[in-house]
Length: 282
Image (tube, rainbow, N blue to C red; front, side):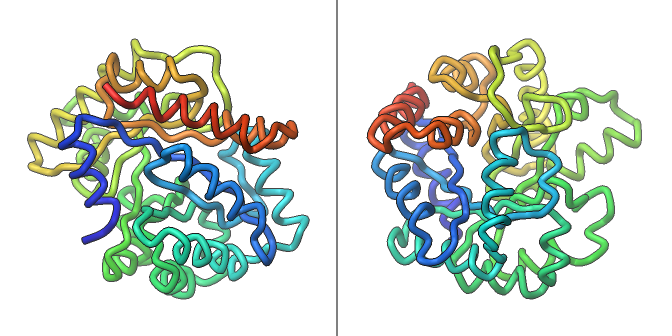
């Protein structure tokens, strides 16, 4: 079974929330990627997303764009990024890994080559937020190819979409996204899905959106962890996402990356990441 599915079962049984974090791509010998991965694992991260850098990371906030553009400046190719993922997989055979990128990178590298690289490196899921899997009817067959290798495609849903009226075209889109979700499903705390640290968690919009998606999952007889993404930056926000919003976990990148970019020691960043993971425990 896919490692993401095994993780979801284990955490549900223990009453613990998922904590998903991000590691940057770095050139061979992948020193930065491995150092960050080691730190994340020591701190208790449940899932690690690793970037396959894109020249146009348009949905990223300033901090995550810097990671992407630094990798591009270092001439990190998709092949190098996947080699880094494979290095992490060899070091941590049981750790769920997700590749994050954008459609421009998938198609410039080659869709089949991208999927085969995921399969070869033991990647459990892909996070390609601008690929319209449901809206386009998977027109290129990207989702189907991933599924054929037991690799999950992660669907992102905005709070606006989660609350659309029934019997509208948007509601049918929402149903399709919930029905096709696998691995886990993102609910975006920020309009447009732009990443970055935010001063407060919009519980008043996230809670009804999460409840609506959860009700749709029950109606459609599907099961998939609901993860809050975009803007999570404190243990308090992590705790609120799980206890007040009712999500199954959180994903964050900028809150950790900005500390690394500011030159904080790995020991200091590890302590911060551990505090975030601790907040997922009820």
